[in-house]
Length: 402
Image (cartoon, rainbow, N blue to C red; front, side, top):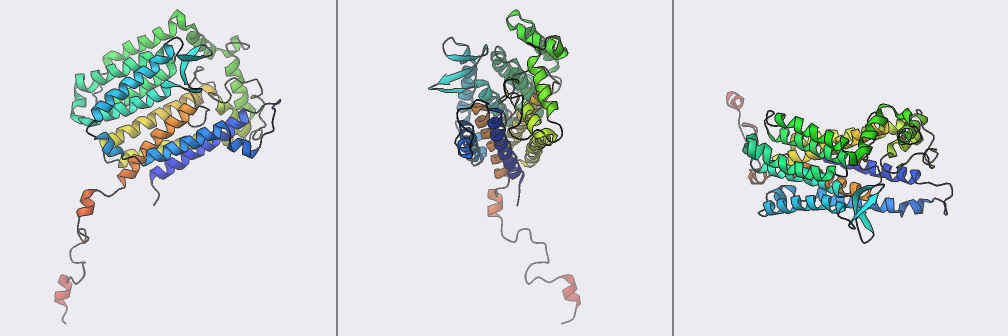
């Protein structure tokens, strides 16, 4: 019998396969030293990352997620994970430790391998909030224990990430706020703090050190004001999206990837999909994300534990918001922001971490359909209606003469 977890798995694998194909296509170069072959694609770094992501997804899908949440040392593990998340997002700011790309220090590099700590932190935040809220659900209505304590912890993490990546910081804050509301926080508790949060976002945009953030808003308002510099990427992205038409130019036949569109394999991969696969390819991508969210909602409705419901809610919110933001940016409906399209944009950290947490969601669905101890101890005929068992006699039998 097919379950929501099976549908989620198929949609995730489809997005990864599409990601490998489109990243490979966007990486094509006119002056390539070697021709592109099927063997070369299958053994490429992109395919290896996708294979690792699939393996991680399968491993996470078979974890005993319910027992892990209730483990005796779960509290200690939660403190360690929270501390690790904060350390990871602060390390790139240390001179000589973080790796700067185009002026942004968001990456850590060890032994030739680089990863983006904020990708790990945003999912760890969801995991820890889900665990905290599920431990004692009744305390979530309390202002201090239910709202203030977890909110302060989230804001510390968000403030550290906002130094280098405001978009991801806003994404984490939005997901955390909705997740706390879903866990039972009273709607009146966050209201007094909303102006403070908005003031913090405004300060992060207007600060002289981060002048580029304000420039992005000005460019979004009128990208044609400086088409050769500030508005270049937005205009090239819209050109790629509109150039594909209904059916697209064909896989590998795009034009914008040949030095015109920056970040064509990462943040703006959807523009290449639209150019080469047209409206059909764009509809497939959107349909796969809708399928993931739909399967997630079905898993939430059937989950046995509060932890499973909250974890799935947080993962779905993160993936859904991230996908929507990326699609809006690529199509020119939002200011340019470095937020990738989940499971499609090139990025080893993003693919692997997202796949792991989707695997945890599948584990929630799997445990929902496992028999409970009560089911195992129930007699084989416990649910048999009276009068329908073997050898039973109904009132009608007594009325009929032998």
